View 1 (cartoon, helix red, strand yellow):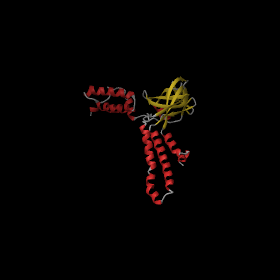
View 2 (view 1 turned 90 degrees about the vertical axis):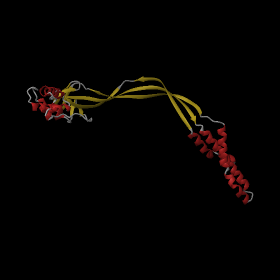
View 3 (view 1 turned 90 degrees about the horizontal axis):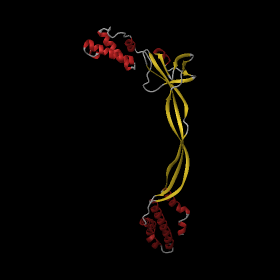
View 4 (view 1 turned 180 degrees about the vertical axis):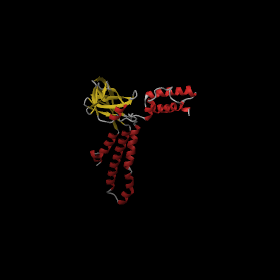
Length: 289
C-alpha cells in the first residue's frame, strides 16, 4: 500500500512545488551590430505665424516627420536554470509527510483486527505521523545544507532587429501657398513674409502647398495674428521728439503692451520713449503722471 501512496497523482504536488521554485535566468551578449538606412515617413505640413517687421508677419511651414533606422544585432543568449534552496526543504518535507501517511494507513489497518477500544486509544497518535514525517524530512534536508542549485542550459544565437526613431521638423522646398485658387504667399525654404491682414484672414483656413493640406499648429500658446489697437497707435509714432508730454506717456504704454504681443519694433520704440521721458522729466515714463 505504501508504494501506491507515491504514485504519479500523489507526487504531482511535489513536482509543482519544485517547478514553482525554478527560474530561468537569461543573459545576452551582442556579438555584432549593423545599422541600416534611415527611412522617413511623409508627415503633416504644419503652419505657424510669428510677429515680424510691422505690419508684416513671418509665416513658417514645416513638415513633421518620423524617421527610423533599423539596427540588426546578433545576440548570444546564455541561460541557466536556478532552483531555490527552499525547494529541497519542501520536497523533503513532502516526502516525509507521504511516508507518515503510509505508516498511518498501515498501522490503522493493522489495528483494525484488534478491539475498538485499542483503536480509539491510538488513533490520535496515528494522525500525528504525517506531521512528524514532514518535520523529519525537512530536518534531514536542512542538515545537508543545500545551496541554490544551478544548471547551465544550451545557449543560442539570435538575430534581432530594433529601430532607432527620431522626430524632426524639415522645411519643404519653395512654392506657392494656396487658399483655394488664391495664392497667399510665396514660400522660400518654408518661410514667407505676409501682411498681418492677410495672415489674419487665412489663419485656420485650409491652405495647401503643392497640393498637400497644411494644418495650422495647435500647440499651446501659439501666436494668433491680429491688429492690436495699441500696436496701431505705437506704429503711428513718427517722431518721439514731436510728442507732447501726455502723448509721450500714452505712446509708451501702447509700445509696452504691443511688445508683450511679440512685436520687436514696439520694444525698440518703448526704449526710445523712455529715454525721452528721462531727458524731459528726469524720470522714467512709468513714473510720469
